[in-house]
Every structure is written in C-alpha cells, then in structure tokens.
Image (cartoon, rainbow, N blue to C red; front, side, top):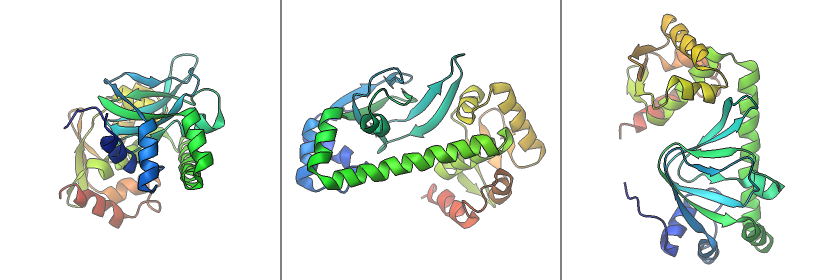
Length: 255
C-alpha cells in the first residue's frame, strides 16, 4: 500500500472525493477545500483527537482505520463506531461547538486531512450545497447512534456478538456453502469494548454461540458461520439484512 502522505492538491482532491460530505462538490470548490486541508499521518494506537480537547476541525480519513470511543470515570472504554477510508470525523463537534464528542484512536497506521473549524463554517456559509451535504452526514450520525443505543438496551451480549460477527462477515467473509468463514482482527478485550461489555462475558458469549452450533471456532481467530441466516435470526437482524443481500456481499469478497 502506498504510504505517501497526501501533500499535493491533486491527492487531496482524490481523498475528498471519497468522502460523503465532499464527493459531490464541483471541481472548483473541491480545489478550494483542498487548498485549506492540512494532512496528518498517525501510527497505530495514536490519538487523533480527545474528548477533552476543543473541537478544531473536520477530518477526512485518507487511509487506515479508527475507533471512536468514550471513557467512563473508572476507565472502561465504549466504542461508538469504527471508521475507515472516506469517513468524515468530528462533524458533530465542529457544528455543535465545544469539545470533541469522543476520542478518536488509530487502529492501524493512518493518514487524514483536516479542514479547520472556521474554514469549514465559512465554506458552508458560502456554499449551500456543502451545508446540505453536512446535514446528511449529521443525520446519518444521529441514526447510527440511535441504533447503538437500541442495540445496547434491547439486545444481550450474545445477540450483540452475533450482530458484530455478521458485520465482519459482510466486510471480509468468504462464503462457504450457506455460511462463511473469516478471521477476527480484534482480541476478546477489544471486542468487549465495542460491545459494551467485558472480556469474560464476551468469552462466555462465544462459547454459548458455539454450543448452539451457530459458529465454529478454530483457535482464537478463525470463525466459521455454518448458516448466516441462522445467525441473523439469533441476532434479531433477519429483517434488517436479508439473506440474499448478505450472500451477495460475501460473494463480492471473492471477486
């Protein structure tokens, strides 16, 4: 993978075109935004911004993966979302004012470009099409957080784990018969953080899913789902994600 930092306008424009908020803008406006964007490179586990910091700008992920987390007073970490290339970060804080809403941590080496808060506000005042795009991104964040609350309140850890495994299957699973197989990238502790639980409870949830024959484990990393439809039913997402759609997603991983 090319690790070159995005320093030229051409490269910045290519990065902006991958983001939901900027991709539909006309070329002259993209060039204007690109001229204002500041690039930054991060190592794995490096903090991009903290929930204790004053919001300074909107970030576009050029390369790599991040996790958005909130920490409790006792040090427990709740993962709100994971973000990859093309994601727009810190929109809520920049438009709401005050501090960043969460802490953003690089899960891999990563590169981002940043448009400062004042520049972003002025661009939106001058260009209504950008403001409409920002409204769509913010609405998506509201829906995303509402779904997180619903999952945390109405689903137990086993169901949340099943939903998490289905998400991984859609992202990088290889289809095997009526199911799929994939390798976990996270440890049990890291998954617990994403599921709003602790390592011991998540380990028991894996055992429970295995005892129900919904998954098979080969060591700590390799997971086989014999039937994605059965796992969907258990997770309560059968109506949210039809089996045909999941099968299509899995097949695309092989192309």
